[in-house]
Amino acid sequence: MNKKNFNKYTSFIDRFPFIIVAAILVFTVIFIFQLKTKFPLPFFSGYGAAAKDTASASYPILIASPASEQVFNFASKTDYVPIEIQSKAIQGLNYNLNLVINDNELIKTFSSPPFRHDWRPDKPGEYLIAANAMDDNNKIISSSNKIKFTVKFKYEEEAPETVAMYTDMTTYVEDTAGNSAPIIALKIYEGPTYSAGDDICYYRVKAIVTGNSVTEVLFSKDDSGGVWGPFNTQINLTRNTPNYMLTATAKNLEGQSMSSITLNWDLGSIEGNQ
Image (tube, rainbow, N blue to C red; front, side):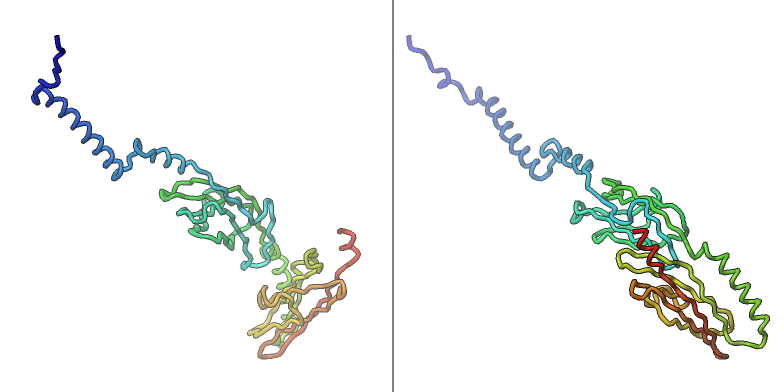
């Protein structure tokens, strides 16, 4: 007895449900591929995992200047703390770098290198600085080391002595009534200070002047080039020229006055401390 081929006698109506199921499967696969191309959803492309890795990434940031526990002795209000941040990792990335003082005061935001800032504090004291890399949502993604340093204002510390000198000079002016020419005195406010890098010993001297309408003060020498202002000078002493007599002249419309001071470098004491 011959075996019948039942597929030969299966009608189209009987096969139709299978055809529908196959067509649905084909269209589903095509739809998924198109959806994946246009909308890279997390469960298709792993985008969510990548975003999580980016958010948790750490970028090395280093405060290169100032040094830890460094002390700054400011002689004038124009002095500043040089701050430098190094971070090659965030260069080229769309991140801002915030410079923060004492964990809460933002003093500078960098959007691109170089990451340098000359900061002028408004009062003396201890300070703590750090740098934070910020994302587009202003969230911290990485932080630098923290550096503590100290700022001292020498010109504030000298204020009582300066007032006393002015008082003495005022008495002198009263005793010499009728003399309207200026009166000048020289006062050392820093030094002798040894600079090992230059092998010099320097003094910083200010001219304290009383009188009306003082037009100018002339120093016989100023190795700072006028950096410390019109009433201050810096004298550098070397091993070949360890002594110098500094002279300053104050002038006004009524006349002029001159004062001098001798500055010395004790080479023996400097060499003994090396």
